[in-house]
Length: 275
Image (cartoon, rainbow, N blue to C red):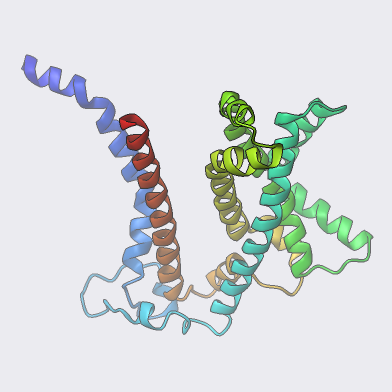
């Protein structure tokens, strides 16, 4: 009995962690199962038919056949996410470098104001942006969605890159300068490679936030329909099962990207430990 208590005491933290991970992964597992299920009607999209006769790969083989504009809305979301990610990553990285490496008037105020888009409720930001666009005569559409997404993505990029910059050892750059490297060469060969993991993480986070956004996009989309808007609209009459296949594929892509990043970090850590 004492050995069992000791075994439990040594492993209860890991057990709780596994339970929490299973809880978080449960909805994803259900979506993955539903992606291989062929419902008998649109009203049974959410039901997992376990009779065996409805299991199919058609949802994956004909992933765009669920609705006429499903893959079109997916393409719109991917395009908006890519554009917003590039713009937000560039702007957020420049702001992060300015806040960490330079002292200027109003720096403290900028440090506080950069958190406002993160703290503002999405419904407030969405309605405010719509009021701004209509007041200035700008019709809602693709450009207004991109502007809105860049607005809230910049804050997350700044926070992520700032954390990476704050953790850099300044002696590495000083060593490069001591070896007669100029400011540009030091930035390109030392600073940028060290900050790049933070920039890549910020870009992935921005793309995820932009692709997933529904509330702010609803106010500023106009006639444009993104993938989250399509899913919500289809929910009223039954979501096509291909949506589950698309969601599973996106999760798989994200998982592979994260796994590759973790493997690369682990390999670098081992090389640093052995050198």
